[in-house]
Image (cartoon, rainbow, N blue to C red; front, side, top):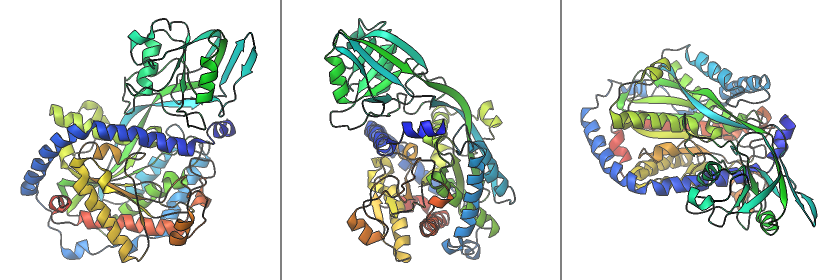
Length: 533
């Protein structure tokens, strides 16, 4: 099953990244008006918080007791060895339904040896889609039969329903894209054939078709796409009790779409072997016992991997680095001026669902002025409010074999989070200049756990070393490594093991993470510093 799943997604790297960024761009544009309003509110709140924040009495000696050079690669690698050993016991994976719970236990056990922080978890539910076998799409007409080829002509859309077997049914082409139930008259009992529409998301179209009685959906790719899409047919920031597709949804290439459209009298067979399960998972937190609560810094890295790989670079490297930084602070009895919440997000690989849940939960509480719910008490919830979070630092993939040291571009953040995000970017730039290493600025549009923060007006930034992007000859000259090769050839694959870790990258980037965490957590005037554009 593992090899079968790997084959199903051998082409996923570029498609997944670009699809997630495309969705994130829409989210950022959608948030522009909201962030302008909340920017004014958060600005006023920040000013007031500066006035009422009581800074811990922290001596200069305590702040300077630790610096970024104390972060040792061998210690991080020891964590990665343990992560990999856990993955090997769970289908070579640390995904939500495989090794993630045991890796979280390892993190918690390591932190419990010290009194540096309060350890807490936050449970939430997520939908997990799995391919159980290959899909089938066949056409029968008077001119003959066609068996379309998976991953060439068509393929699964993730979250496109569960297993189904549909035989000898008519396909109905819907010119308006299926966005409204009123557009879908006559689709009942048929397979719907549509193109993406600017009037609604793929999920909104597919769900409207299901509501209108369609028994399956075929969605065309763009005209220039060379492979079927694997986009999620799901509400982007899905939460418990949101709807999910039950009928099968396949992606077809544009040429396949044209072939089907031009044979209206044909009958089709559509077989899906897949499932969607709703399961419980959790975020893991280490909340420092010292530091100004009104200047809280959330330091995040996702702890899960994809289902078909151990994810030692993605994102064992980030989560193990964050763990080692927290442990080193504990060993040095570091007392930050500003509270740090170290966060190991769950279910990032399922669509940033852990970080989205965290921010959404705080947003709802702040809007409704609610007390902590009984459910959150059972989850040992954090004692922090949304307006007390000054910033987020995100570390996702810090040790790619053919790496480039990347810093997220603060100017990509919405206006309400832009100033602070630029200041975070500048802090990382200072680090690379200090250690005399080249770096490159990359986008901050989507694909990792900073997104829910910037969409809600909270400045964010982070470091990364690259995924499936291809290194150019110019980049080889500037950063070393191999040109015309992926930055991480094992991205989202079974081979993302401890052998996939570049130790030079791991040391450089983990120390860069520590540098900025120490800088901002020791700042006397954090909010003022973040407000300087």
